[in-house]
Image (cartoon, rainbow, N blue to C red; front, side):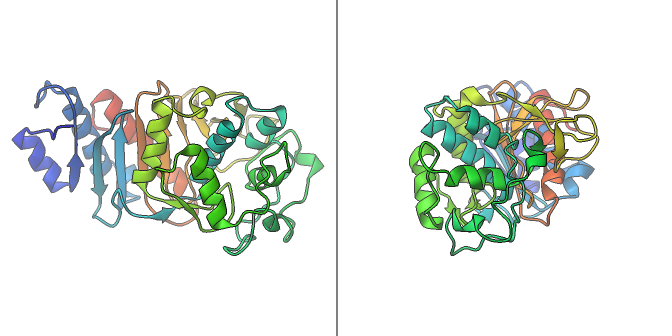
Length: 327
């Protein structure tokens, strides 16, 4: 791993609080990594969609290492900042299930992990930090089945909560509280990945750092997890305005993305690039590009709805990186 050394680039990097690492190639305009990093940095710092969500931390890397990173709009967030990641937890749970199933999901798994199970009543406030996976389903109607939503895409945490609680041959995690749940998930994804649960909620309870989530994403790029082969598999439509099999989605009405095993496929025919992602409501946005060559993260903690805003900025940073052109 070498630091890009061109004086002008380093000056720009220092001015924007960039921590940039690159490997291979010569410095200057002939260095593709340096050109990509500069385009991504300037986009994160200056594009109006990105200035609107500052401060945040972002990084892009490949299967071996982080290639570029920065704290945009101040250093509130850095790679080691621990934060709740809300629905970015879903990708981790999907990957956990894939490991448990040795990469071969059951029809039941697919239905639950694609949010078509009919369990659609989970309240984000209906699970405290002292509960277990199963007890979260016993109050506030969290475990109620809705026949009218069965077979339809309905974005809600109850699908994963119910799925995790099902006895063998299900996941059988019902008795686990926060610490046990974190240990169980890490045992499958890798004990090198640091994470905790602030609630025993599979779809949204994880707290971690960009550093640790990046380890997970690099494992996907290295084909070290069964999830790699499942990225984009059995994808289902998610936009109720264009699809009769979708009832509820967190994305905006003008976006036609699909949903796969605990993650989005950003394949809108007009604006999408096919990336895989799992944005959280507080603004944590991880992604892997469609070619499974690069990963990226936008990390911040904001109010509800922040995931869409981070995804817009993150996609622009990704485009800048892929094209070496500032967006």
